[in-house]
Structures are given as structure tokens and as C-alpha cells.
Image 1 (cartoon, rainbow, N blue to C red):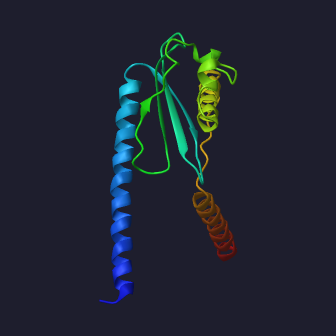
Image 2 (image 1 turned 90 degrees about the vertical axis):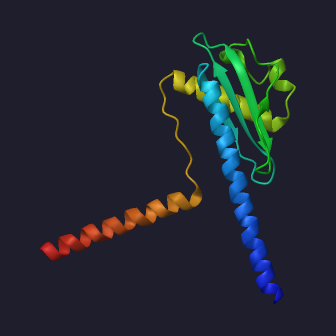
Length: 161
């Protein structure tokens, strides 16, 4: 069997394994989110690490704005799992800032993620809509789709004249 076929089979197997592990990680996220959502509102902060570990932080908040549970997932692989984020239970989410002791003891990426969760919570509490960034190819696809619909509309108008 030529080496090219062997490498192709290896690439397909690696892709399938990554897909299965990614699916498992999404199921883990959904389970943790559901568990936290059952206790109260959930504030989520995220920072993608394009060439380093990405981080997601989730805080469960009671009716008074006090954090009752906090979790963090950080890693570069699909093997990363949520872990308890210590030091935040009992603190009002609006009191969490870049100068808080519980924030300063975390690494820089986790600090940014925590502050993102606080910012998202405050914007939602103020009634703002949170805009989700689209993947680059998604926005390109939508631009192409919009352009083709404009062309189709112009062609219909020229035919109807």
C-alpha cells in the first residue's frame, strides 16, 4: 500500500477522533450549563486563544446578583473539562473588577474572560442585546448570498420591463 493512502487513512481517522471528542466536549458544556442554569441565571465570558489556550468562564448568579457557582474551562484540546473556579462564591458580580483579589490571582487570559463575563452580565442587565461574532467564512457566505439576491432582483426588474 503506497504511503499516500496510509497518510490519507490516518488523516481521516484523526479527523473522526477529533470530531467525536469535540462532540463529547460540547455535551459536557451543555450538561454543566444546564446544571448551573437550574440554580439561577448564568453569565458566560469567553476569550478564544487562537494560538494559545482558549477560556470560557461561567458564573451562576442568584436574584440578588450574588455569584453562587463558578466554573472555568481552559485548554487547547478537546480533552479540556470544566473545573471549579475558586474564590468567587458569595461575591456580587457587579463588585468583580480588574482589581479584585479573586481576579488578580488568575492568569491574564482567565482575568480577561472573567471581566468579559461581568461585562456581558451588566450589558444584559441594562437591556442591551449581545452581538455574537460570526466566523469569517459565515460573514463571507452571507455577503455572497446578499450579492446574489441583489443581482437576481435586478435581473427580474430588467425582464419585467
